[in-house]
Length: 242
Image (tube, rainbow, N blue to C red; front, side, top):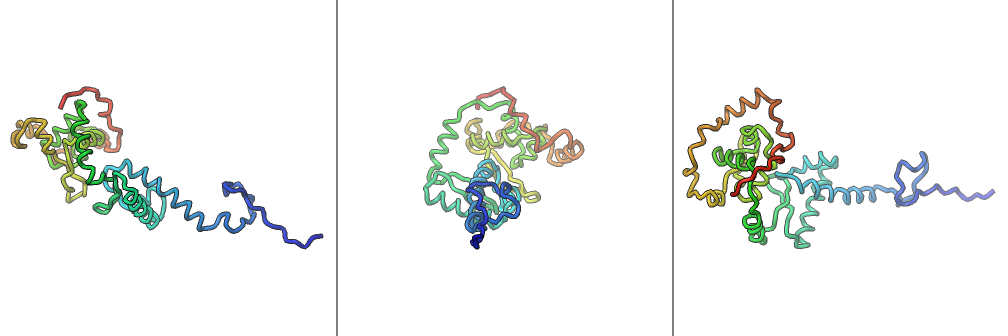
């Protein structure tokens, strides 16, 4: 009988861990911690890119780590690696840390091209839902998305994104109590409406409920409005030129 030691079976490359028989030894280099860590990083980077593509506000490292179920340090390192990579490659966008969170932004040197696309290339008519949302922002500015949604009684996230893309509204700081982003109308809005200033808006504000009334109403009738519900305005096809 040979005295040679019996070598443990080595699973083929790409074999799932569950496919290896219990007790089977894994040869060095076929499943070590260093390769696992590298695999985690390689999977984490595209996952971060996918999530950051759809965020409306800067996402914190803690939130991203929780969503992706990864250590905060690994997420922070991957974010900085991506930011450096985009800069080195000269991409038209950058990954920036702003107000404690990460978000994609277009690079300042391409601002003119972006502005032409948004203001000149987006001449499609606004839907009735967009016009109503724009009116709420105009008369209640600065106002948060949740307040706008409360006034209209439906989720307005999609419509607000459209107004932002058209350059009709813009961010105007944050609400001290909640930290929510506030929005206001832009000079382009005044230009399109033919107004010299907001003081020329028709006297419509008295017919809109005050902030306190909005909060009281939403607290008393929570089932009637779910801020996480799908944007029902997406089905509104009524359009108006603006």
